[in-house]
Image 1 (cartoon, one colour):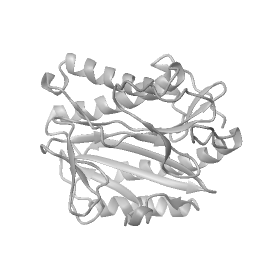
Image 2 (tube, one colour):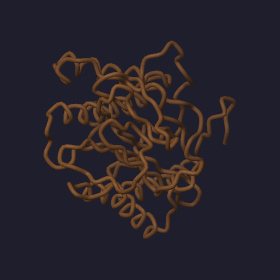
Image 3 (cartoon, rainbow, N blue to C red):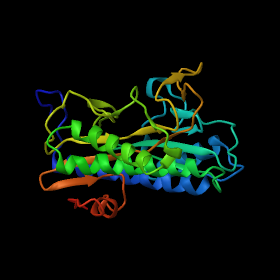
Image 4 (cartoon, rainbow, N blue to C red):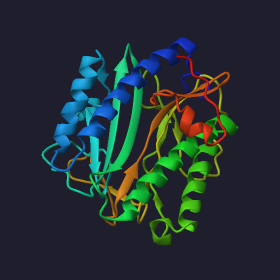
Length: 281
């Protein structure tokens, strides 16, 4: 059901359907994470996800989306998002971000993780990955405690500020990418509203039961500015700095939130932030 704000508010049964899609995505990303080793190609990772999604009887969200040619987005080092899998060989110390979506019975799940391949060659890369993940979970927790959608961006930026104050990234500012943001999700992969990853004057819509949102901060070790390569998909940092991207699909329910693409519904990570989940499994 669409509200006046054009947001698609889901019923509990529709959220359960999205959970099924979310678990397919979780399975695919678990398999991809295990396969992301030195010597593997980004195309190898795409094939792993393709097989998991097909075995589940699901459909990839990304393949064919506006002409996108793959099942995954695999972005390496200075690539922020939308990297097209292919023949690129992963090397020790690469920062790799993997984004995956799947559809089950017409409902979408969408999630992403970042990792350092093998052993990190620069501790600051691990800090980048960890800070981005922490920013994502802070944004998710804000859905349970904030009154309006702007609480997500405020929570993300607070984590980034605290990380820099603690000496992460050698005390240099992380760039919070602004051109690419989170989004509503449900019967389509991208829906209103946009979910900003930074503080803004516009407080956004009120957080209400039935909203399903993809929370996905993207951080760089340098400038926040990006550009798109000639393939019209791959987004890279303008200054060549490394980037990381984390994402989960989250439902707001009458009694709390539920992370649909996390196996435990987000219970462990959110408990550490004083938030309990309303898991309907």
